[in-house]
Image (cartoon, rainbow, N blue to C red):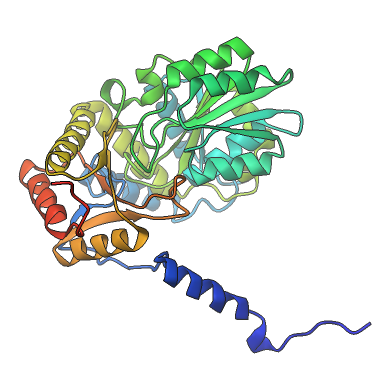
Length: 390
């Protein structure tokens, strides 16, 4: 039998076809390295509290690197756990109102860890249709039975959970990253209690913005520390650093230490990132008003844009999403904003579950009123024809 051996130049010929299809659909993505100091007004990053460059955050990173070294040197179960990691975990759990916490290398890894360790072939996982890709991938890797329910639909969750007699869990973002809308956490929790199911919530976009002093969406909903509730979060948004964490009952965290592959087989979070996150967390404790400023900025952006005729989703946290007529229009709008001195996010398929492209704006706590007004003027001035209804 002859063995297929294509010419080296032909092995990846299929990529050319895929690239042409992306270009025709306006879905090409490119890396755009930014300088250390950018002249652009930033409404694209997830630095919700403006802490990534705060002197205390930077000092926390520097001092951690000087004391512990540049890298964690190994997985958390070998040499990658320092006293600094343990300190960060204790303070995260205490701040957010949970019994214990486990720090991982990213929020993505945290979601994979939680869903795969708590689900298996005999488990039903009910997943909100608006969930982040990391939750979707966690569901797939768990090998559990998966039922995707309509976005923010507690009754659909209740019906799905009622069909399963074994272990089950409901997993949802707390604040959905595309439109910035909040999940009906209290109703989801009630559905879980009725069915004896666990609730896993990704609070990546709620920590630092929602709840008392930025303690998160679960704290705001009165669910922090509840026995059947697990939270995941990232250290890269409101805390301006890098990494992720899972929070919940101590026995859940012990279970993850022993079973979660993205924890066991991954190098530990770099000490500099742990030190920066800890410094930011302490800043948030001492300056709780930052959370309210982020929410107020989002409300101002939304009000000004919609009053001018743009279609935007009402923000529940710090994200304001402005719908675009097409993927190419969104791409052009983001490019025109950039030319005018404003950096905004551009969300297109497959990043948007409903297929509708958007400009995504983040209202940082350190934005001034003048900067918000400037951003609104720029967006309105670059909006494509037909984007406004006035």
